[in-house]
Image (cartoon, rainbow, N blue to C red; front, side, top):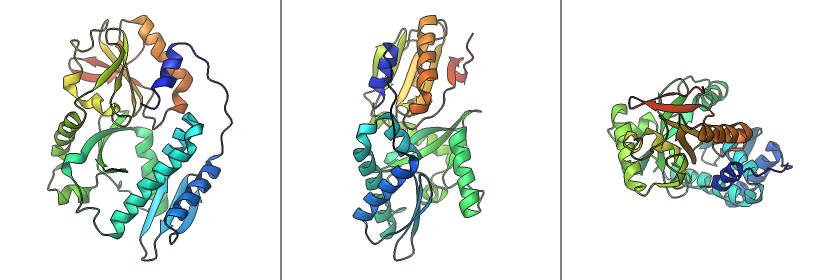
Length: 291
């Protein structure tokens, strides 16, 4: 979990020093340079900061948004080279699959996992689709969980993660109603060894692989007082895909610590989700409101 040490630093009262970062525009240029070195024949158009369009000689077009890459860089500036390399490898793999016309045919239904996004992410994608392509339809399957969260489905391969489309589901002969059950089954099989850091009776964190911690928010069987014997009801915060903070509704110290982490650091999380908390009552999740 990339952000674990930073989070624990806040728990232990460490201070975060000011950091001077390269700009979004500079990171975009560096990313383009890496891609062009790996695929020289691509034509490139930077449509805005963090947003790049590529076109192959055969006319295939692909858009890349570097919003999450920039957030990762800001959380760990020294990792810039590895971040650019990882995101460019993901893009190269996607382009290879498209050019070989294998994108849909190579889908492995055992590699479909649930992913949580928030309303702002869905709105951002919706706006992009309207402004750039003049379309209202979203490019991937998504389902509203509550007024804050949405469910999407990841197709996970060795170097990249992309979201499941309606065309993918049709190819696999899957109904939307089947996807949550299938993806949770895959999640539990792939990450059977979920670990906890901290004290499950007071304040703890889920640790999986750095990508799918937040997805376990949907695994109802995990969220019991037997696993988390906290004071009061279980309260969960999922500020980022790799960070799940658990405490109790009657644990004033745990709640204060979580509130401090969220208020001081939310804009620096990798792949952020939401600063809204959730409370487990009657085996369902509701929006948590502090007392």
